[in-house]
Length: 291
Image (cartoon, rainbow, N blue to C red; front, side, top):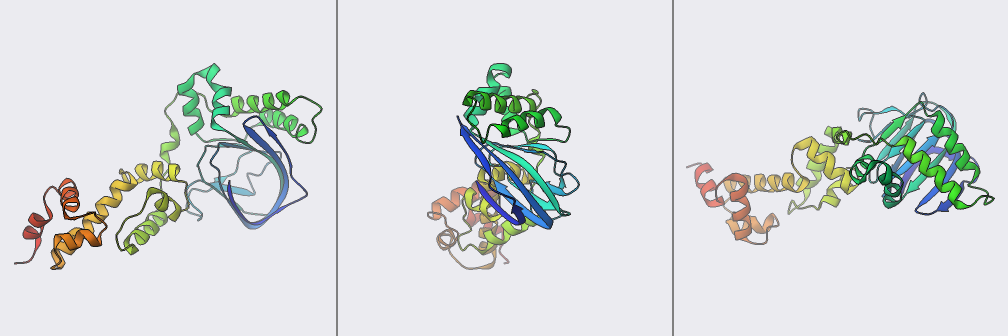
């Protein structure tokens, strides 16, 4: 898990326990006004607070600035794998919470027998935020008691996690609502700036995601929702746009332009140019060059 915090202090050692396909960690901590955190896990994650933090901590999945959809942190949240989480403290607050990191297959094992594979898979992709979490908090409290003792078999702790998963995740059959997420304008501007600085205008999806601080899977999803194109389609369109400018404003050959923009050869650029612009580079140059 990737985690960066500033202004958050842990009070005492963490209590943790590894179980089958999961790890549970209990923390006591405090954060000062202006404290921030960034969290990104490759596995699904559940966070349950044992006191109300909604008036002290805000959260966002879209960015690290105040305009990026920050909202009050809830008592219990489920964060799907690869979904980034930013937090910000509006005032000093001491809190305790348990983090439960689970393997995807372990969660499916909990849910599939009751709701079916399709609904279970959809539930794993949907973030959940609950403020009224008394029942889940009770289960979490029982789980915390199992973190520092082995008086009961691990099956007991695992069953508590299973009950938390079943009680927290959204297992309705509705369409996944995660697609409402969007990139911020600041993130798009940063991405355009970095792509434009690259001599060959080529970046992998992973590099593009890292540029704006998102996981690759989450970035690919929200990018498509924001622009209507996949990251590679968008990037290809920008490269062809640069090629059009070079065709119109320079005397470089098509082969030289292809080399500068990272295409394998002139034929590669010509084929791609035709797919995007509807005509060959040579034909486009003839139509758009000043006489």
